Amino acid sequence: MFSKPLLKATIKQNYIIFLVIIAVLMLYLPIIITMFDPTTQDSLNGVLEMMPQGLIAAMGFSNIGAELIDFIGSYFYGFLILLLPMIYTIVACNRCIASHVDKGSMAYLLSTPNTRSKIARTQALFIIASTTIMMGITTIVGIVLSNASFPGELDIRAFILLNLGALLLYFSVTGIGFFASCLFNDTKNSLMIGAGLPIAFLVIQMISDVGEKTSFLRYFTMFTLFDSDKIISGEGFVPQFLVLIVIAIVMYGLGFYVFKKRDLPL
Image (cartoon, rainbow, N blue to C red; front, side, top):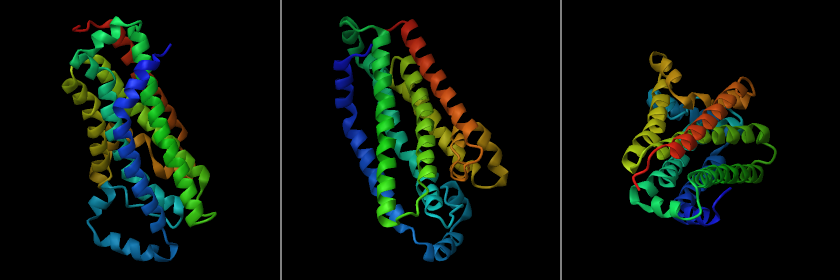
């Protein structure tokens, strides 16, 4: 069902960038958690009010509450969690299929007892598993650090849901990247879709948050489906999660189909 040698080779190819992104996440998350201080929230809000409000809104910092989960939700899940893992997923998705076709190594893979379906399943497994591990580490570290720094202050249920929402979002993002990698024979065109669309969606999301005049743009990006405020409040996020799941299933399904059916320049 899966190719263990290919999976090992893919892990070896991507583990460095995986560790780099994890390290950056683990650098920012503790800093943000330890920055929380209910007694200084008014002062912090005053500083933010002095800065350009459009920029603050675009970065997701415009709705900072008095609770720890609101603070983390704004500072970490408002922008950083949308950007940093995307760097990893774009690279990993591009390398999974298109890079092998572009470099000619796909011919070698298909000369072994590996079918196209087996290769695609193996690469999809790696992308999904590694992304899940990344968000799992973030969840565990966040809970441990929050309880160590502010015992009993973190709404653990809401925090887990935030990370689940981010994971489902990245299943959709990697679905797009996987489909693009399966569709094109070269990394340039694969990146044009696999990287271009998610980056465009993120930029559109940032612009839509600037003000009322641009708020209509939220309907043109799937990042709107990850609404940290709704997740923290516990209201209205379930349909968004379901849509993200559907997008991921459809995009991965299309990726499997086109890779199996199309001609390859071998």
